[in-house]
Image (spheres, rainbow, N blue to C red):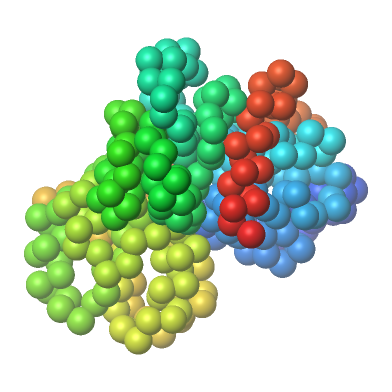
Length: 319
Ligand code: 13P
Ligand code: SF4
């Protein structure tokens, strides 16, 4: 067997020994997604990852993704051990929204409902009324707006702008962005669309407004993958992390997938958007974390009990 096949077999043995199940995000390496899928785990967007953790009976959850995903799993399942291949896998949105500054911002606007994106620390979630992911942000803000609520939104300003435009809600936005999606360029996308006039444009809402405005479909990773499968077009320009192509190709092998441009000229695959923190997940450090049992997520209980409420509110709403 090849070295890789041996490593995968070794990981499977360790997972059985540790009664562990693997949950991976679509932006992680294809080998990890394949392993999650055929070992009884899940490959998913962040909302589905959160839900899956609460539904499995496994004693150990291994979360391949970025830190907020592991933290959400631990917040919802304190009795389970939650391991991650690397605890250093952060997210620019999380980093750009420190709990102290965020809390002061909330204190200055006590009349607003605090809605935070899942891409935040446990402490920021603990200060919120609602947590949302990209798949459920629109309906939740619509619901709050219909009840006459004013919103304080953090941290992604691009997702915030998009939701504000669609719902008309009164939203005060924190100034954060995803470093990966922010690289997509509106004018280069226009040029690419002229070159591929039959292609549908799929955009993750963490992208800048001028990119979102050109989209045929705006949605979470799962929603974009579904669009490739369900829509009649044979070509798709895709503005999100390149990790998503693994699943899109698997489910729609005949369709042509074109990475949206991240620079002035049209993109080649070498210049594809790819999250450096998602890329910290690999077969090697997955094996290591299973061998050693270290790299487990810990959340102080006083923060956890506050953070779990807005997350559960989201899961209830999504039902
Ligand atoms: P999804 O919830 O759409 O999977 O997004 C998570 C994320 O981090 C996107 O950059
Ligand atoms: Fe965070 Fe962007 Fe990476 Fe998603 S792609 S984890 S939002 S930095």
